[in-house]
Length: 375
Image (cartoon, rainbow, N blue to C red):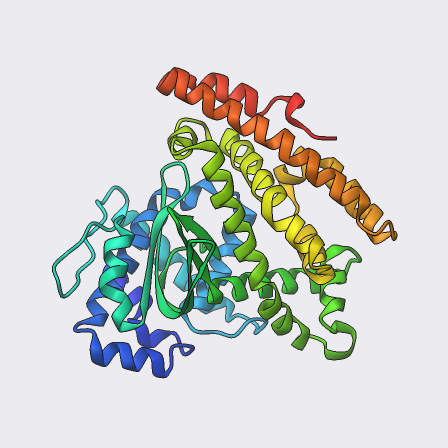
């Protein structure tokens, strides 16, 4: 059975970690110990929740996780026998870790709580590293450690841009908001886009993703256009997180506690409602004002699942925009979306404030009600 250290094999396992890794290794004592501790916490989180995924999603995420862990470039054929052996060993490792407590983060100033990302980052920033910790769904912790590429402050919100990732879990969200800090993970975003492109290549369907690729020159450049799209659409990730911050200002500090009450199914609806509010407040109006056609195509390429089910009017407005209405239908849908999703989210938050832990049935009923759909 592999150990957590063997599973990641330290920072050297990722060939994308070049000179910046070497600088961090020389300046931060026992970087390997830090990486191993963070990766172990990632494995503990995965041990408890990997089984929550559908089989199809699980296999797709494990394939991408294998690529990251072995430093493999996107689109390369995978060694199936090696993947099978690795998968069995990883599941065995998870079985051995299930139920373990998360370990403190070892740092020169002393060990820190693994969820105190602010304190951890205060120690790591001088070494060019960035750390993330939080929850991607109720009860499901998520951690990562990467190279800090740059820091930017926008409207009082700090944006931390990470590059090569030294430690991560099976689920690697490309962006996250923590308080007034936004984490933007370039490597995770790039790998997610390449996975999306690889799946699209199997059928080459027309639609929003193809339109976004074409805006970046896919017909002439082929896969090279994917790299351009990754560079160009990183800003769209930032806009959504800025929208999340604006939505959070409206909804108050209790939202995360509300999400912790409900079932996984209901949480999809709760999270989607807030996502729509965030995008109607910031992402979509900003892209429309900038006439950012490629980014609008890319955003709609990712309007799927529950989010698409809850806001069919937006999809109709996108179709009208593609047909040449100059954005009038989109602007109308966005304005109405701000009102509708603001009301829905505020009602859910009010239920939580009124009923506390007893609010779960009412929140689930409201979140999944057909009345919530904006047609």
